[in-house]
Image (cartoon, rainbow, N blue to C red):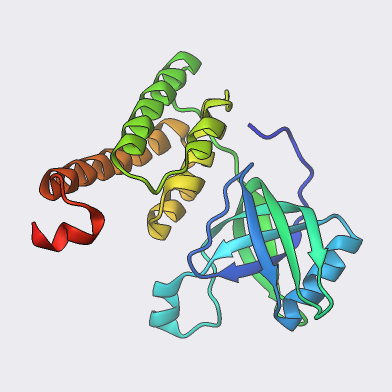
Length: 227
């Protein structure tokens, strides 16, 4: 878990489709829009903090509101940044804290939001959470054996994470390809409930991969249409 951090009441934010940052996770970002170039310059000159919020596409479709953010986002710190000759930059943002987006303060020259830190709760004893962590590790290991899209280094890295909540958030960030589910996981503040939600997702993935393997049989990837 992250230690207590002083998070300002107002921070810049990037509102991005399909983007969900979790505490402790490292998110690579490419900065090229003029507004975000200015945001990054100001951020690096101050506390190196800004938020990433997912774009609420359903709200956008219903209201036409300009880049409506989800109510739950994550504040992160710029850990590394490389600026290029053309004015664009590549950076690594480390998630620090879940926050509630209270309001949009202003849009120009870039979006500033007013936020409130969100506290998570375990929802279970430490022993129970560690048991859930072990079970999830076993599920992830099974998924790794069933498919090839999960790099070995990812599973190896997760084995080094001791804290159950941090393990869960990092696993969800790295291995959940469903942006809507990732947002729901970010919004689920009880760790035990979050474990159940993500474990159900991994169970479904394991079932799908098992079925695919049975259907595929001994055929190679280029011959699957012959099955």
